[in-house]
Image (cartoon, rainbow, N blue to C red):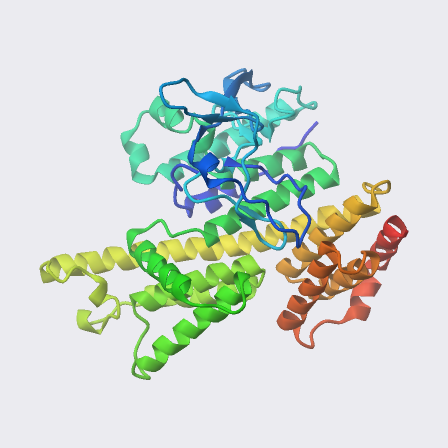
Amino acid sequence: MIRAHRLHLVIFLTLCFFPGRLLSQDAGALSLRPGEPWPQPQQRGLNQIHELPTQQIACPVCTYPVAVPQVDLLMRRRPSQRDVALPWRMHFTHRDDDLCPYPGKDKLAYQADIVVCPSCGYTNHNSYFADPLPEGGAEWVRTTLTPSLHNAETALLGNRASEMREDEVFEFFNRQDAIPDSLRLEHYRTYLAAVHAAPLAQARAAWLAAWAARREVAGAPKGEFLAKYYAQAQAELAKQGRRNPGLQGDITALRGIIRRAKQAQRADALPGAQDMGHRLLLASLWDRMGFLDESETILMGLYHELRERFLRHDQDPLWSATNSRASQSQRLDELETMRTDAENEVFVRVELVRRERMLLEEAAGHLRRAITGGAFDNNPDDARFHAYLLGEFLRRSGDLPLASEWFKNLASLTPEGSPLAVAAVRQLEHVGEEAGDKVNLLSALGRDGILFEKLREICAP
């Protein structure tokens, strides 16, 4: 019998903003190896994508007919013809070093492989969605996932929920692409933990949930004020000629922009709206690089500044961002709304960064269990690849000694010059940048020596 246990999801999602229509993800298919170029789809083909086709499947818990996306087919609308199914899988435009995927702008991009029943909240991979549940599983879903789903939907709708009937709320979230990834993947990992799924499956669910949180941190703000100045920062960064491409080059260039802007101001000048937009973008870039402490520090600084209130409006550095043509009372109302909304949104991002760190630590723990449990005994390439992910998750969750030792072992067990070896060496450099003299390799060996020996045993030629 499965024990019911509480979710902290509702508290977490109450802080979140409803992201609107989400984008189709290829749901973490991990055929790509770190360091390899991501194949770019033809833009013409992307522009013709209309929607994912679905198949009606009865929910095994409540029998509600769930529209399950068929992720290996896409619909293309041809002129003067009906939609035509294409046997082609949507690609992402780029990935982070731990392979967190990012779709193209304004394309289908919700986590289509993970299906949520909009009636009871049951969540599973689309390949197993129709399978019978383990003993006690259906009751656990009804007592745990169902109230979590309904409470989260109400929280996401905010004030609109009080004006909607229950059936209208249900209909609002009845499409798979209307259910936020944060909810979809939290339900998925929670369900797999409740049914004691294999460690590798639980690891994958945890890192998918972490990636969903990261994409929220890396995405454009929802509020009008922050979104405007975030977009300005992105446009300014795009104009910079950078010798070093990639995230590291973006971070270096953006820090230079911020530094030069501060030097041009008075020494005692408080940060204004434009500076906030630049620092919010910098926090998202640090998060994508895996330097979560730097990201959280920037976001907390912004949060405290947004909580500030001034006796005189002309002392407020955000006053100039209000509508100068409006009356003073209207501008004061706009200023307060601007600060409050931005303050709430930045705090959401602080919580998302912390959530990402916790989920990556959980994913690393499950991956370690999978390696010691023999999940990769017959597949050295798969073992090396997941060992790389383990090192990345350890680094991003702050366990730098173990991350360093994993990457050292991986580099020595992988053909020199291969994409995986190059990526491992690059991650060792990141660990060094982040840790300085704090990495104690003897401590790491003492705690995980058996795991390293297991890795050598699996990957040995």
